Image 1: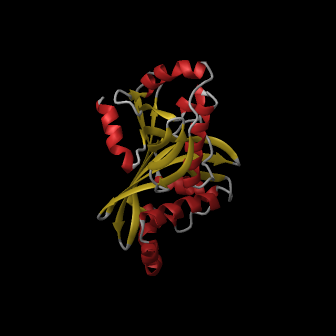
Image 2: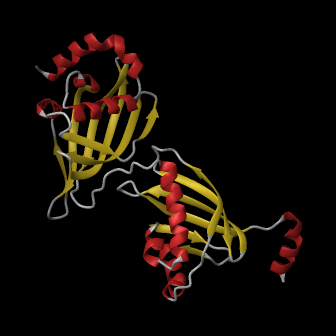
Image 3: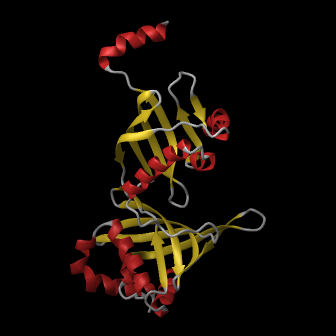
Length: 286
């Protein structure tokens, strides 16, 4: 049956139930649930008439290639699949909306018959039309290297583990783990006025300490994590027990292309009791 005719028939049949699913997220959940179930029944309603599908890749010469696909063929293939064969697992779903326009960014790992097949990112464009949100366009990337399954650990715990593990790596002088936790363009700000470093500058400063097995050992006594599970940016502040006494640390973190959290900005500052401020100002001025 032609896609447009099927679309109109489904609009008529399902219109009483659409308002309850009137969010971009509900549309995407129904799309991926249908894929996992191997059931395309009613899924044409998720797409705007004339919706398009493309994949972005790079050829052997390094040129960008955009390969068009077919929504009709995709639905037909889905209808032939058995339940559980196709499982596109999302690392997170970031959605932005403006009026009746929405964009969704969903890094994914595609599992075929229980095995990782490929991974990449889906970029969805959706519009609100005829009582619900519908997909206008899907573009994706696909890669077969470095694919990992999405973490099942709650995001808040992922961030806690990152922070605790990062400090612990310094305590045991594990430079690889410590600096791998930073983004390539990370900035580290220390307690001295001159300590505003890029990751490479920070590594050059810290390398002798790590090689000597005598880096620093900071332990958090208090930490507050702020995050949106479906966003790619989060932050925390923490109170640290250090050789300098209590210090305050603040971190901005963001997800990499595979959804793993990395530290993009960290500031370390000494805490000064209010009753000692004048003495500290005097010491600084001297």
